[in-house]
Length: 253
Image (cartoon, rainbow, N blue to C red; front, side, top):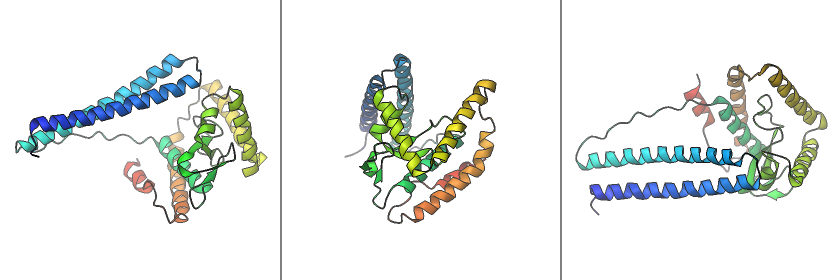
């Protein structure tokens, strides 16, 4: 079928409509999850979800328009227009968190990528895993601690966070702690719990936000990447998901 301006525009509209339908499905699912948690600030959470969805759709629309215009220009024997791509600055903490979470998965899973949930202690398949943090990930002084990150099934993870106010959520958190003590030791668990208290004390007293955190992360990321490479070498039947070393070298400042 010969390409025409109308067929290119029609293709662009179909791609955008598919992206819009997917985004609305994601929004519905996220809103339902928030309603299940019975949060007091539900309206604010829904508004936050809507802002993220609309921003995502706006970017998708811009990409579709750029591709459509270049295809039309190509049809008219004109050179393609080059659009400047804004390079997103690497968030070092989120980047380090991704590597630490993958290291936890490699550490806790067996040769078939199966693993036991840290809370319910049931054997799970690889598509059922979530990264369960014993102490919330926004407590920066322990968010990357290997003891704090353990594989957890989605149902248990959903019960624990963001609020452990329901009876099932409290019992899930208690089982997490009991199994973590068995896995590591009571001293190790009490140590990270003490660091959590110290973090909040420091924050409330001085509003300390770890302004020098990026400086300390540079060496820490190198250690995480080295550990990741070593752990992947023991899982030779699977290929690594991302080349962390290459990404880090390209974005390291």
